[in-house]
Image (cartoon, rainbow over all chains, first blue to last red):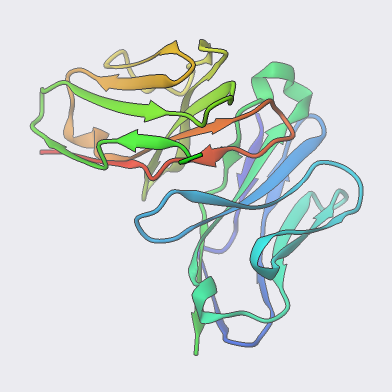
Length: 117
Length: 114
């Protein structure tokens, strides 16, 4: 079965420093990969996705993510963190090897990013 | 578009009572998903619909849970009878086409069963 792992429950970084939030996945076919952000008491907001093509994808608010097929990873990155980036981040996958059964997004458990000033 | 709209935002009910959560997807979207979020289990897919037809309900925890989508603009998730362990935030999401499109989430309904 498809799965997503976010190995860190929390990531702490100082404002202005680069940040990385890790994500690895397991699928039977080709993965479609997504990152979402959740602010307190809010729904999830889409940040970026990898479907095909360039392994480095750019998204909202200066975030980017790199797809690495050999390492089955899709880490989220930002060159310079802001205090306002503090939130809960979710990695998600669609397993295209499952056909229609892989339509729904499967989410990791989430990583809390805390950016200090 | 106003986005995915869920109601109510908060619901407090007593154990044994029936609870109905509502969702209005984004107009034109043909997929609708129900997720549940808890601290222990994270975000779990409960069920999803395509063109109002349930496709996969394997995530529905028990027969106490049921979901319907009578038309393209409305879906309900019902819990009857409710139990304290059902306390969670329930999210509805919709997307246009799949699988390479992102899903848009509502604000969620925070359910507390006492």
